[in-house]
Amino acid sequence: MSNQKTDIWMPLYIGDYLRDTNRLTTEQHGAYLLLIMDYWVNGAPPDVDSILAQICRLDANAWSIAKLVIKPFFTITDGKLTHPRIDREIQDARTKKLGAVRKAEAAAKARWDNRDASSITSSNSRSMLEDCPSPSPSPDNTNSKALVVAKADNVPFGKIVDLYHQALPVLPRVADLSAKRKALVRARWQGIKPESVDDGLNEFKCFFDIVSKSKFLTGQSTNGGGRPFRANFEWLMNESNYLKVIEGNYHA
Image 1: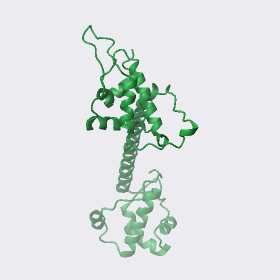
Image 2: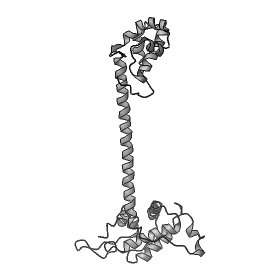
Image 3: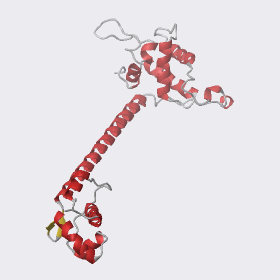
Image 4: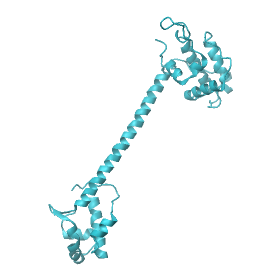
């Protein structure tokens, strides 16, 4: 029996225990329980009376009497007291513990894999925006409202639409900024997580500049000679389309 420790808990099947030990005295119950608990923690003890008496907290005389009813629960193997039932329980506990560890490791790996995949997607999604310069505030507007920390509920919808119109005059104009369109813009703004309003607006400006360089998105090319496609504001603010644009899917 290996001396590898299991967890700090030990199963005790009350019905089985009481059935097997109904002839033990109170002192013998205590000695037997101490012996099996030591077995659980340290493995099979040597068949040496002085050691067994010490484990059971009994003097030599008391142990000489108690061992007559306690040792029959064990089998002497290679000079040690072995207990098949305890051995099976220890092995079962180790198997369950190993299974739990592997399950936890697999779950952790899955979380990290998902996180890595998300990071890669995020990195790829922003790769085309990295060339856009960050806004450089002039000394006289450093304390302006445009440079305050951007908040998720402080989306400059009108300025974003203005940037769209300026960068993409060939695309349909936004006549009405509906609730649906505002929700799409707000989601993109929250995804950017700008440190300031100016930073956020710069991200949108870069995005619209990317769109302006796509012949397909601006209606300057056709697929198979059909009617040319032209993106519009709502289409561009859709999450799936937004990601495809900044990943370069329409710039082949």
